[in-house]
Amino acid sequence: MLLTDATIISGAEATSAAVPLGDSETIPWERDLLTLFAQNQIKVILALPLFAALFAVVTLLWTPFHQSVTWFAAALGCQLIQYCLCRFYLRANPTKSKFHEWLGIMTASEFLTAACWSTPLFLLWNNASDLQHVYVVASLMVMIAARVMISANFMPIVIAGTGLMTFTVAVRCLNETGYLYAGLGALAIGCQIFFVMLARKLQETARDMFIFKAQKEELVTKLIVERDKAEAAKAEAEREKQRAEEASKAKSQFLATMSHELRTPLNAILGFSEIISREMFGRHEVSAYKTYANDIHNSGSYLLSLVNDILDLTRIEAGRRDMRDEPLNVIDSLEDVKNFVALKLKEKSQTLIFDIPEMLPKVMADRRAIRQIWINLLSNAAKFSPAGGEITVRASYRDTGEVAVSFIDNGPGMPEEEIETAMQAFTRGSLAVKKAVDGAGLGLPIVKGLITLHGGQFELRSKPGQGTEATVVFPLARVLSGPRAETIADAATSSSQRKLIAITS
Image (cartoon, rainbow, N blue to C red; front, side, top):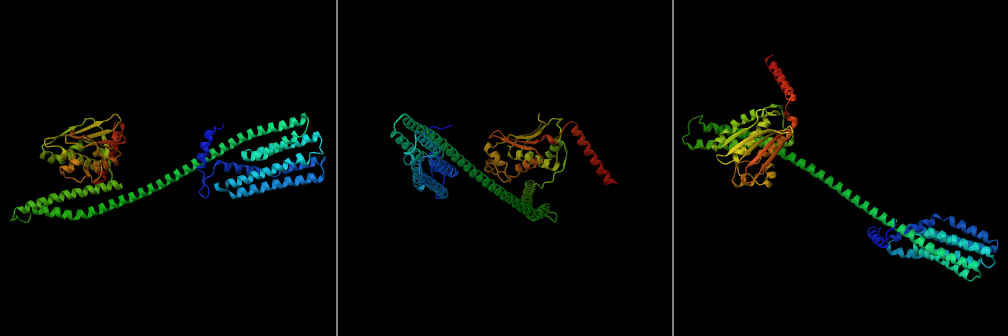
């Protein structure tokens, strides 16, 4: 399908602005059309001389030998000139500044060839009969058609070549009398008009072809550039990821090393401060020493718990946290932890309520990890709930087969935009900072890391003035319900029996 002139012109302009040359110039689609003409001319290098030879041989019937041979030599010379020029043009690959020079040279060579083929109308005409005149005109019409097919992609060359031959045929026929020559002249002019229209359509088709080709190449180039950019970005992302992993590993290693180095002197501080506070080697003459020793012991205990939290977090992040799964009753594990936080709840006159169904299935989990999750969440709830507040622990068996345990307090809550921050290590909410609530910001990250090791999820919902709800969700794969629970329980019992037999034997 051919484009309209406006579309073609705009497309050609867009293409010419996107086809770079070696010297950073750009060329329009005319350069590609001229290249196509040169390639076509080289392809027919043997066909046109053979046609000229056949024509010269036939003219020997009424023309002297030397005239026919002279014309044939001239035709060969013109053809050779065009061939050499086309070769030089293709090798030169001219830039925009030299394109018009080459266009003029090619047009001149075509005009020279047309002039050579027009000479038989005068040089080989006088001694011929009417039939031989028809042969000469018909041969020129064939040559005109051949030149149109070769140079149809470029109108200036078509006009320079076929236009001259048609003009000489018309002039020659007008100089003769009779209807035959009038008809031959009219036929030549009509064929020329048809050939020009045909050449124009062929040029538009070739032009559209080059435009689309250039647009496709430009698109492919852009896609290659974008692909290279994406690959470079991916490689950079991989390098950044590797650097981040190495930094995280180095951080974890540093924290683990420092934590171990701190635990040794801390244990000594805790032991000696406890001895001093209990006056195990005699009473203090100054009672303030006992108070100071208690303060030292409390501060050391807090620092030791912080060091333990750092160790737990580094093990979780490094994937070195040992997991020993066993069937676990949720209500029993919560009751065990209740005694651990009872003192904190009593100090602030807070109430702890368990809302747990009796038929809640067991879960397959690591007992120590779950105990730490319960302690962290209950401690957080007690820490941020007001005096006389209420903390509710609610468990449910969801329709999806998951078991969810929620810790709900009636504290001040936090803005939704701070929830994501609260899940990160060593970060605290604005309320904790404002009220100077103790803590290092490790409780929730440890909870999230431990439940993630179980394949579960940790959900945190909170709004200012409406309290906070922290939910731990055990996945379906860890919920022991139906025949699966009985099978795993039997396996656990058998394992315990085997251990007891091994100990007593």
